[in-house]
Image (tube, rainbow, N blue to C red; front, side, top):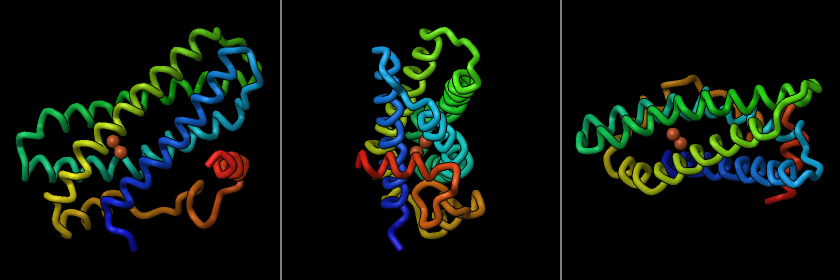
Length: 181
Ligand SMILES: [Fe+2]
Ligand SMILES: [Fe+2]
């Protein structure tokens, strides 16, 4: 099994691929092309459900342990924890707009674009900060006991999109993402 920081990094790369996909579809949307709302919705759905159920709660435990060992990082880490909440809200807004479009409700285009832009900017900035500032420090500071606590933060569940058993709802998205890789 890979070390925890590598696995952490790998999840970020997967999230980044989904964000790239959403951005590509949103630019189709902007220029009046054919965006795949269904797949875009599934990408945001995965990010909102998988990341917010597994990834962020584990990070929250890692962050707390890091602050105990390195209080200088308190402010930077508090900001990242705040971003988890902002990402959650922005992602839910975007998900609701995509649901409305799929239900044929009229949604103002600029509202959808603004929600997507907010989500993409926040999420990418968040990932970049964690990659640059947090993962290297976590590799230094956290002990095997800390990592056990991180994993124990949420009971392990199979990854429904990138795991070995892809759930039915994400099959098309998985095919699309694999093609784009
Ligand atoms: Fe995070
Ligand atoms: Fe993260």
